[in-house]
Image 1 (cartoon, rainbow, N blue to C red):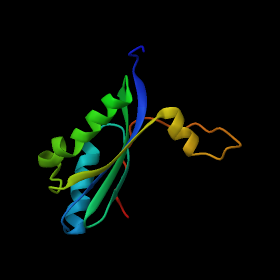
Image 2 (cartoon, one colour; image 1 turned 90 degrees about the horizontal axis):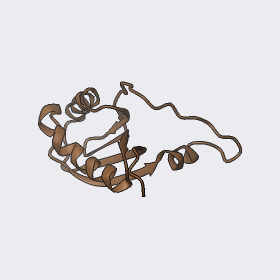
Image 3 (tube, one colour; image 1 turned 45 degrees about the vertical axis):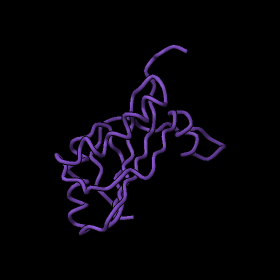
Image 4 (tube, rainbow, N blue to C red; image 1 turned 120 degrees about the horizontal axis):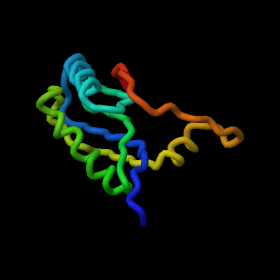
Length: 120
């Protein structure tokens, strides 16, 4: 297998003890400024979910990096001390196929953005 870089769509879900939703929202907003390629942020008083693009040669590499995101940004973004309870890593083509009707292909923009945290 060649080790060419590929794009992976990553969803990380963290959950734990309930926190003030405003504190969670502010922390998620800071995370959005710190982590590249973040395109979706959702939160509630007891969980949060981020979606972003990761570049890696293989899915296991992207998954290993994703498992570290929450803890690596915990202090700097002020994230709650929650554990990662969900992880989904999809190759770009698979993600795109899920996002569109089976009858017509559609491109999904990949790049920098500044998403706003949304409640679940």
